[in-house]
Image (cartoon, rainbow, N blue to C red; front, top):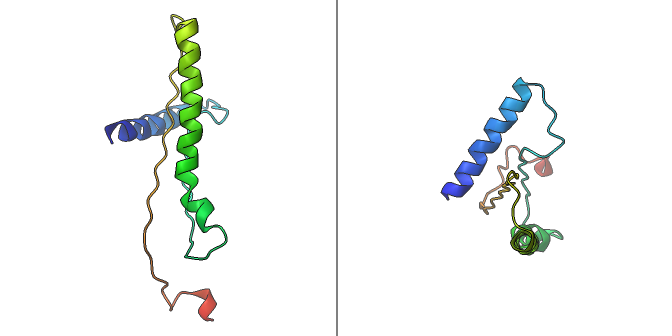
Amino acid sequence: MLDHLKAVVQTICQRLQRVEANVADEGRVGGSTYGFDIWPGHPCEREVLDLLRSFRARCSELRARVEAHNRQAGLPAEFSEVVSYVGQCVLQRETDSENDPAED
């Protein structure tokens, strides 16, 4: 958990430093939050729920290839460590019938 917190804090700090210095990051530093309202039987339910699993699988495969190359080639004197993080939770919600546009 501390690795995730460290990555989030470092990302926020880097974004703020780049904004203050008016430096373009070319999409290399930052984060995004996506929320999905789904329910059992929703056509995208499985895809949404499997998003974390597929991201982890893709990252694990990429990390294995990067580490294999680095073992063979060795690290140069200077290099960049790129840290990506993602989190997912499922929150059970109830529709507020007073504010539900479907009720109108």
